[in-house]
Length: 340
Ligand code: SF4
Image 1 (cartoon, rainbow, N blue to C red):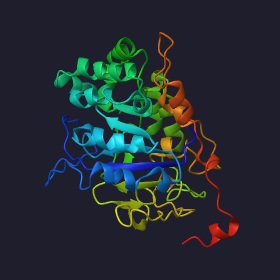
Image 2: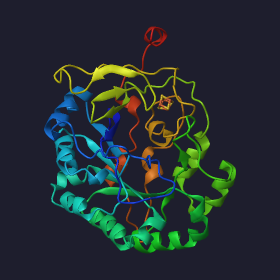
Image 3: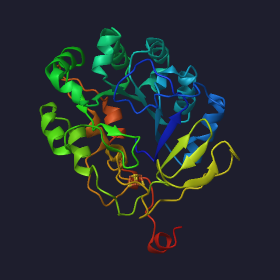
């Protein structure tokens, strides 16, 4: 499937069933959030196939554990019914949620991609290592796609071999590795006592294309013309607020208002508000800046297992290999010049 848009949808959950030391989540929560403000059906209409102009890849991610949102399976069904493809970020241990996925129609399950975050020490501490891999394998059997990603906290250096071994044994391949970042800093600095070069060397044996691409773009301010705000946008599903990128301008619109009206897409252009494109492993690989050569997003997520199977299904691999410029028109010189 060729994707028309990529959406970062913030799921209103700020609680978690794990306590990772390197977590982005604010440890001093003053108010627990774990619930939607609008019906799943209304959210489906607000992000309809028609309104988005075609099939979108919608990434569902919370500040806490995404799957703790009780309405999540219903919300997913509404978005899947619209024809979209979903990516769900999870720590993989809330089994009741994955059981609900198994009850979904096959046609829906094959349009779901899970990003399982491997929090090794927390899985050991909570005795949920088996549960984690069982849920992954159940999702694979159900026809969903997945990836396993490790945040390479410095403390994991001493258990690298254990992590590789358990991933090989239970998931058929070694996990991918990301770059740990400190979201309490404006620059989203590297969260490690090592330099980026050292970190890449330390984790090189994991042979992760995700780490390779992220380290290539890490820390570089983007000055090229970026289509975030048009081909991609972020939305807070609690408030309905749309922004061009994580830190981009508000798009003067709330997705829950005038639900039958078109959404006002407007690209960031050359005014990227961030110090670096820290989630460019998705944005740039999907082609949000068409002139930047990048591998397909699928390449950064997939692994081929020892038995010859893959983490991504063939259909999902094809979808996550989309380049957004193939479904969208690039702006002309005039439009680029007069962009506010
Ligand atoms: S370059 Fe990256 S961070 Fe900047 S606006 Fe585009 S997508 Fe967002």
